[in-house]
Length: 67
Image (cartoon, rainbow, N blue to C red; front, side, top):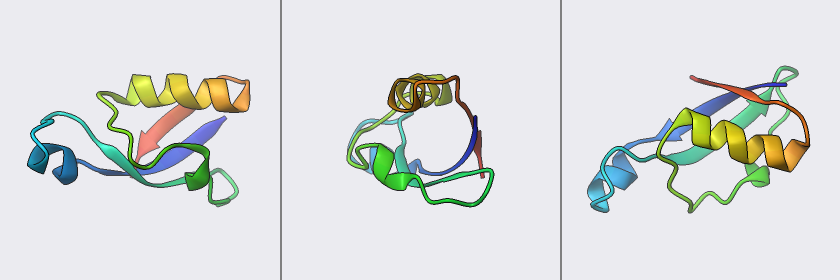
């Protein structure tokens, strides 16, 4: 499964958690909004960490592309 992610890097930086990001939006290949599948307050440290979380949520391998 391929997901496009719009990420917020500024909030982490401003909160003293530089190098982390939060999710603004997630969409699948068909354009379906999947943003509600993750905690938008969570700070992720890498795309790999986000992919791992989404793999658990969907039960299949997930690749994430930042847009």
